[in-house]
Length: 293
Image (tube, rainbow, N blue to C red):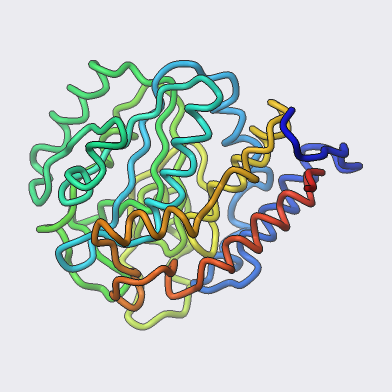
């Protein structure tokens, strides 16, 4: 165990998962709290179980296109999860298109997928799955295909020409699949697509139909990663959340050209929220599972 003190919680793992899930959607920024009862509670725990004791390859898909670059929500959580999994002995690989792939290629293992050509998606996924033989796949804030086989952002704009297709990595996988989303148009939201029309937004959400084994919803997709790391920390007795530095990752990706998905500005925010919001949430989760400085 590292230098942080651990005191076992009085709550069992199911109860902890329920508490964490509540924290993740407390702000209800895009109606995710309203969707929570459409999922079977305990999804953070179940998702973490899919990554427990994994020592092989984990494919992490992320990168939501905004204009000609990528947004901060998604990559922050992906890079934090990447480091945690590597520390636990797994071999994470980021799956993304350009410009993100080019930006991260010198610091991370990268699997590059084509942008703007969904027709190549199935063949690329099958080839990559055969090559990597992953033990798990996780999508973090990746656009998911809608019923018309196109990609849309929260403004209802068709972004297919700038999106890379990660959907088939999940639908063709023989290993467990996890997805994290915060709005309804991301991979994995096919699990609850029949309920997305009840969310009161203008323009109306054009939902993704792509499904996954375990869906995690959160106010900001990056934050869903912390729900998984909570249990990986408990089981390994390593305070992985204390090693999660969202502000450092934001600075790193900002220098590489990222933008906030809401403001569309190159700034150190996640969906217009300052890094302090994510840091505060990490502190809440750490305290809940029993870690303290």
